[in-house]
Image (cartoon, rainbow, N blue to C red; front, side):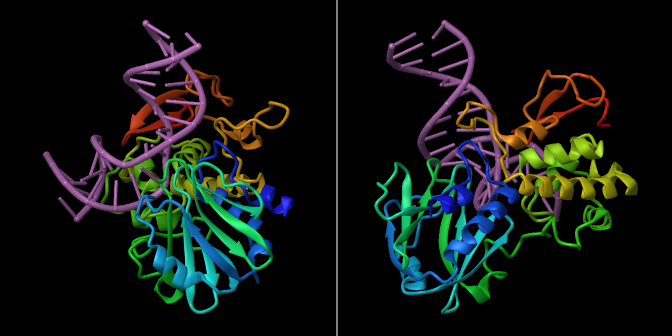
Length: 288
DNA sequence: CGGGCGGCCTGGAGGC
DNA sequence: TGCCTCCAGGCCGCCC
């Protein structure tokens, strides 16, 4: 169980984007599949949307977990009986396996007792997360999912798709890529890094991006996400390991959070601007 | 219609 | 040292 806890935990300070949810899904799946949910405890229903306790219980109690999926930043716990438990971690959510004897932590709003005797705990200090149950058949039509765009790690995601998708629009490319109606799963950090890798200025209008740059952007987005997944999704701001060292993926961040530092490629000073209320970092020479 | 932005929420950091 | 303010951001809804 300890191994599962370490594999499944989104570490402190990580802002869960697509790679963090995918790492969580892979870490939890071998421990959850085959388990039955024997008890559901909800301590606080005031998440981003009020938790429907009765719906959650009726859809999950006595049900066996058949598989774990992911759509955008939603973790999908598929159950027999035709329902799916949907978990969104928001900004600060964590989903971890723990022994039933472990004391309840602060901000631990929900726990699910499994047939093995372990528990699945949902902790979310900022309460931007979501917890609900749906008939599995409604997963695409439900209002949380119906508007969502393409998965960036699917084969259909490429430069041609992006170019077609933005036709007739003039939004800054960063805003376009962070809009889940176009592409899902990208948060501020990975978009920022992908734009740097592709050499595209974050404020550039989508109307003024060449075919070549769209191809490069698609490749960069996939490369950043795949690298982050391979490195355990450690997107860390304040995480430190036991020795006080920094998380692994932070080393790979070329521009995010590096205002006033030198660009590793050209030496120019990395700049920060605010777009749609979000910090945006870029190299003024490498990104045009 | 589409893009910008405020609000939700808490903890951590920085200023005085 | 302690209090206050600011900032982080996924997502929705409102506004222009």
